Length: 304
Image 1 (cartoon, helix red, strand yellow):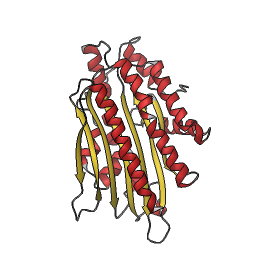
Image 2 (cartoon, rainbow, N blue to C red):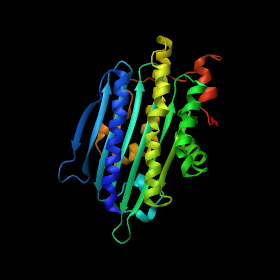
Image 3 (cartoon, rainbow, N blue to C red):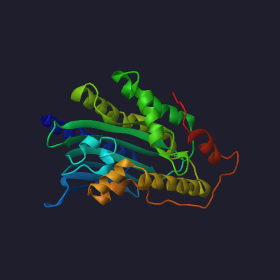
Image 4 (cartoon, rainbow, N blue to C red):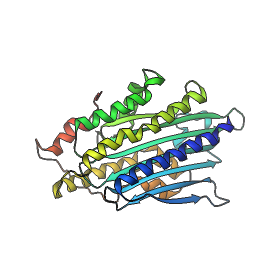
């Protein structure tokens, strides 16, 4: 099984390169690479490349990172559902991105695909895959939500009719701000601890999901990136970005995994928007587009 690790790494690096090339061309400004490697003697060893685009014409911040790390002990966020793996060393790699467009009508998007290997001393290695993508609009458009979900559904179709409904529901459950009793966005798909049909089948599904990101998001971005907006829309965008920050810091397992395992803080927090805002007990005007987002889009709904 260990011989397949270079193949997964090669795919993930190629995916990162494809995505950043594609969206850098749309922005007109290239992503800037920041390669890093852990210092010898640190508990966590490994390397990666953070690709960042800040202050662009289309993206206020867009980050797409690859990391490949090994560590002596799985952090608590990885073993909370697998107590038999407490104390095992691990190897993990993945590509994770969050794009924050400038235009308030263009939604924020997140995507992650990853492989984790737990290496207990007295048992066979345990491998699993995880990932998914989700869309967080600030103004709701049904055609955007439908397109995004249809692309996610199609990426899973050849792996079983149960996958999209399961992973869509999992996404709705995962990207939920419990302290707000509110969904983060219109959802998408999410899966974790996945190893069905062996390594080959699981890796194939990971690739299908990763390859679906560009066709899922690019048409939406191209529709919304130049839409006329003003101060009102900007204020709402910043307010709703505050919810994004809350979720990432309070609930996100990926953020917790990275920080608890001694990961590279700059790369882990690359997902944060450059600007966000909070207001005390803010409520949008009834009947407004802002109210419609909360009533019709930031809810659990079957889009396709």
